Image (cartoon, rainbow, N blue to C red; front, side, top):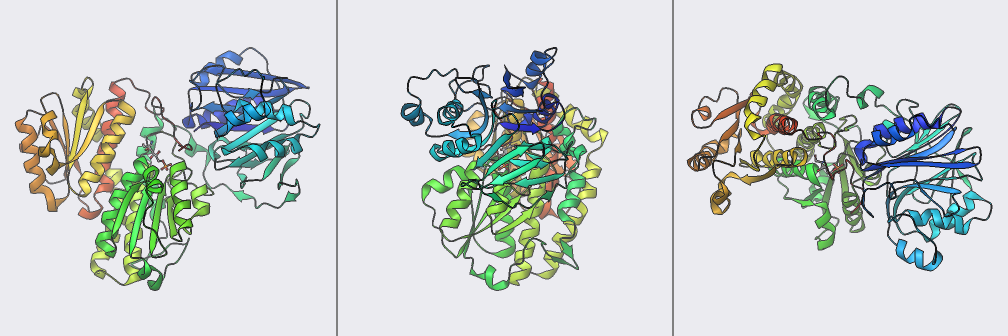
Length: 608
Ligand code: M6R
């Protein structure tokens, strides 16, 4: 939530800030702003709405500076408006601040230190700028330390002082931030895509560390302002991966990237019929100790967890519970050293999932993370990490991260079974063989013809108000994901139901006005799902069914079908969700929705 960027060097900061904000707009897009120091004058420009509004506003102003900070906002405190947009400034106009996170004690801080001062916004962030002015003793660094000492909450903060224009100061606690090391220039940003065009050298910072960016380089200091050593990492993602590359939307591009990223998720992890992870090794004794597993995540990652439960329970025979992260930590779950907690998060920074991870560690559990972002909070704090290697996912609606999370879970399931010595070797090998086929099979699906079939199938969804997704077992898990995707980007109310559950109440809602998407891929439940489809057909619902290639039955009793290539049935969800992603995409498109940046949402949810 919220993207922040800072630059100091020899180039015009304005161009670099706007470019960086474009790359971070997926994090929030209700308003944006920049602050630069020109000579010793602080100049701030902000605009409500998309970044383009800010660009229009500054066009022709001939702004120039070698340093500055920028922000793109997802509102928490105060509605989207020019006044609430960041950067926020001190009363004397000498300090400017951009912030991602929440200052939880901002009301107390106002009363304690800033009584009588005039605030121009409804935000929590503005207190930080005012405190900088209040505590300033002629030394910017010391002043920032004093301010941090009184702040409570989560923050990534980047600050400038017009009286010390040779530096930018950045710090973080529980909100993401990455530093970019350039040649006579320094960068800071919420996420790597903002840096890729300029540098691949980056540093990650921890809570309590103060980063002083100058054009000569970056010095990281501790609370006593003593310099500390930091490892410089190389970013592996390539710059093109964060561009649309000719696709109309990032979402479509990311759907099309799936065959390639499947290869990356699998690469090197299956050797002579055995799964291995470079990142860690687990022994039979370690695995045997776990009597129970929790999978904890939010949104799409939670839906991936629902598949993970079925994978692990079937292959490893350890009971698994899947929990929404925002619920998990508040209900005093029964955790101990004999419990493994698996957290799943594309961004690795979702606040609720991070909090759940910490809760689990406090209770003595080992935590295994499945994530996409190297260096993210979740990657750093977990005991074991499986990277999904999906590359940057920019569209707010998650697609390739979901399917690669599923692949990571299948690999994990087979790995745990092999290490523990449970399950039939041939059955595990068949799953691994199936996984290896996924890149080619996914590529075979993504043809012009298939896209045309999907567009035809959803043409009638333009004006509907409600859609149901139904399925059983693994098909139900992906029905949940299909329904979330549709809600998120097309704004159509969608519900996913276990197909057998409809008749226990929800069938009352089914009419000719409620189309149904039925997933009938799992062979073991096919006959039962077919019966449930006939129940909704009897209520005149139009049914679009996702079926296996070669299924000549279903088309006889539904309105249209979309087939997926034949693959080992247990791993079919990875392919069966692809038409669901495309159904959402094309439905949103005919409804004229903003596909990559749906209303009210942001890519990374760093508030609880
Ligand atoms: O980064 P995470 O995987 O932790 O994000 C969790 C959810 O916020 C995310 O999956 C969200 O539901 C997606 N926008 C769905 O497409």
